[in-house]
Length: 240
Image 1: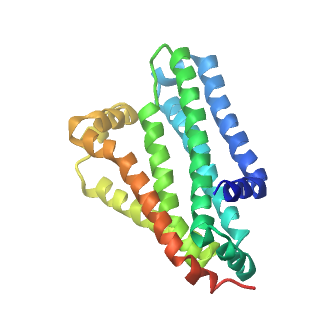
Image 2: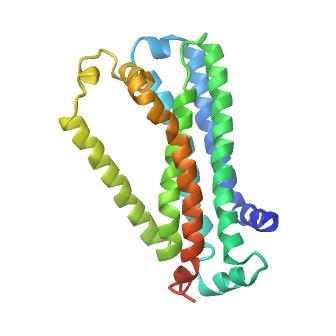
């Protein structure tokens, strides 16, 4: 497994470096903005807080965007046949890719946590995104869990299209809730982002949300098992 994992890092070294660089740039911008503006960044309007959250989200988005390169390199019958002939077989081949993606997400999470700690100190405890960082990490991990089996079974292009449909479906559900659900707590608030944070911390949703990281990790593990099972079928559809 270590050899296969090393191979993934070696082959995808450029994209791995890009992920780290983008993460450092996003986190660096967040720290600089907080250092220059202080508490004014989040006290006057919620635009500053939203900007910080978007920077964090973009940092987590990069590993997902580059993960397709990880699978495109092996999308041919020769590479697949070689992978299945190794001692670890197709199981080790697929699991090493899952570990590679997970390690990237954990590195981004670690850098983001360090950045959040620095920002917490700069702003004197006025802002902390620890809980939301865990949620963003879980959300991106869940999307990868949904996407990867389709990429392995049908190829990277079709896998991306299917993931787009899944995201569109989730967005539609959210839109329906915003149109017909009870969101008076959000509409009647002068600070919608702060109202959202308070809603997330209330007793009604705190427990279900606290389960989300465990659900996403479980889904990621299940996704790996599914990918191992469909790998051979997908390899038969690859080009020579």
